[in-house]
Length: 410
Image 1 (tube, rainbow, N blue to C red):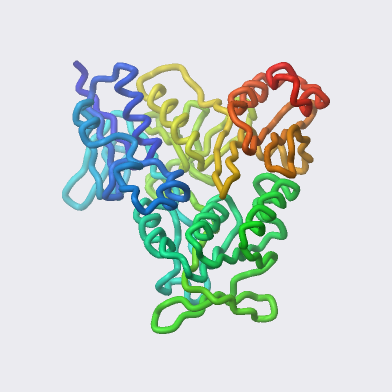
Image 2 (spheres, rainbow, N blue to C red):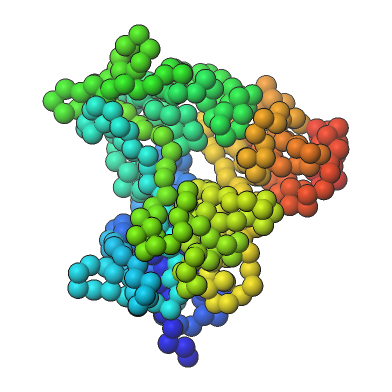
């Protein structure tokens, strides 16, 4: 039996997946997971989807594994514990002034934090950010009763999902965003317009190409959002800030690891230190298929990155080359996206299916190759889309848009 100790800093899905993979791959040494939140590692997609939308759901329903699983697999989990320093000389994780944990290999999976709103009144009661399970529970309690004026700041995936959930609870919802078309930075203006129409069909109001100037409040509680367009003040009982997230790189940066837009890693998720790896939202690895760095904040990245890092930690020759994947649910529109968004920039998508009925697949083809695909209310096709992208072969657009041609034969 080995006496080595692997320490995982972070308590999210990447951390839980890495710990599970270590055991699955036969590592029998010590495993310690150090998470700053009071919860066991949990899934984040439900925070803006079914957990937020269902007041009957309990926190434990989002957990990756129950307590018993970690005990059975000999994995020591510290919840509510902040790793304050990574000592690379003595290879120790410092927890506080009196305690530290030695490691032979360490994995940084500290995730990301919401980008904060920096305007007057941003700290007023009723202003919500959504990142943690507790954030979701607080927001759910605020919107579940309906009848509130909810203003959502931002028009990315989290913002749009929370807007849909707030509207489904019977609240009046207004989305305020800098861009001209929601989601356009992610999927382009043509598809973004499909989603803005979807929200308008459900009664959501938009204030686009606006900057938030101030959060108005009285007696400490939010009352409105002032924008820079003619000084309009939008009435608000609740404000949801959806301005994206930034990676939690502080412990890596303070330790002297290479950090730029995330913790820089090799394709095997090794950092600039030979015994420290990084995975999940915080990692900025070289992607072998692209030959460039690709940082992703999605659920699939946490799973794939956690698995790859764990295998690399025990000496396996692996690289993280998964095709990025995520999904979104808004009202009656379910969506899966797979591919490389940066390669789809300025590429106009082509379609198969019925766009007007929101039952279609959008494809982005660049240089004759499929680089991304997005299926809306069309199921059991994402794996095939990822296969074609991974193969990197030239595709026939006329066959790609023909619903009678199997995707694997385009």
